[in-house]
Image (cartoon, rainbow, N blue to C red; front, side, top):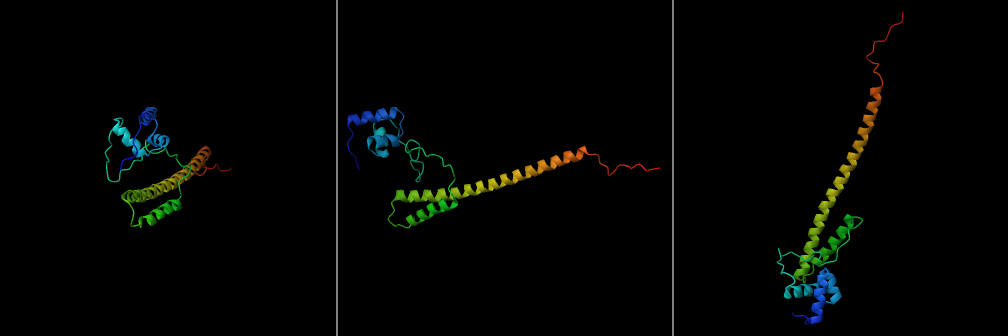
Length: 164
């Protein structure tokens, strides 16, 4: 389905915004058009090469298409991740899903699995780290005690002088 015809002014504005280094999502917002419309127009104008999908599940989540996401200050809990997965499972039961929605739900399921695995590794590393710190503290205490014992003479093997 074809969209609205671009005016010469819109094409000039598009080129100007692109030359200024703006990402697609920002250009689309400023021009009141979809990111896909921006991408297609850039291809037609010869300002962008045609991208080939690498797989059926490839999606456009590059930094030029989506706003940069800030890193979370805290990790989501397992419960939060499970709630997201549960919602995705509910949505997956809808028989009227289009292929894009199915791909998105598939991505959510894969991300949930990956998160679970990484969280398990993270928790395991944290427990190993805690155990290592505990062992280092015990070693330091033993080393300190050994130093103290080394400075004292060992009287158990000394011959005691006898009184005459």
